[in-house]
Length: 111
Length: 115
Image 1 (cartoon, each protein chain N blue to C red):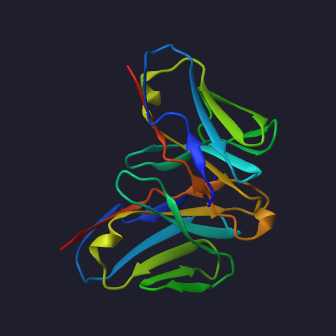
Image 2 (tube, rainbow over the protein chains, first blue to last red):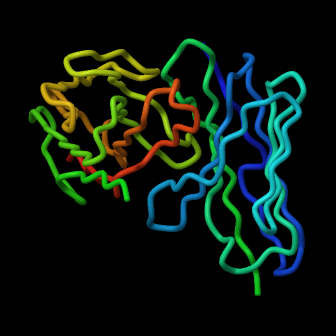
């Protein structure tokens, strides 16, 4: 079945350093979404990417969707302690209702 | 603002019990989902429903069933709870994919412990 792999599993950074998490799908996706889950909370939607090669920015966060629509990345510039949490990608294949989540990257920011 | 409400935050059940997890959403969303979340495994889809009385299996449906008699309510049923079903269960809802931007809106989760 469809799989979505995400790396790294954990990342510890010093406050002010950059952070990137990568997502790879075994199948071509119609779109990909990114979510953030704070410790003790539930996943909260960040953004959706639909077009091949699409790049979107939200303040210090940059999201990319690969040309082949099989991979994606989230980059955070100059991390802050408020960025702490687990970041998940979720891929959707065409013709389905299924959001398949990656395993998540847990980010810890050291002040 | 979309609200997805799960009936219990914490549940403790015994092996073999029948367990009902309830989820209600207030935004008239067509799609509803049940995931379980385990450390290192991310969120895994158990079942989803794209309309009343419609359901489809996700990736790990074994040992679970679902019910969607009304649009706003999606129930997850553990027919005979087992210890390997101890987990965090997350319900979510969304508009159809054809609506364009269709994010998942999650409830706060139910942490189920089966002893």
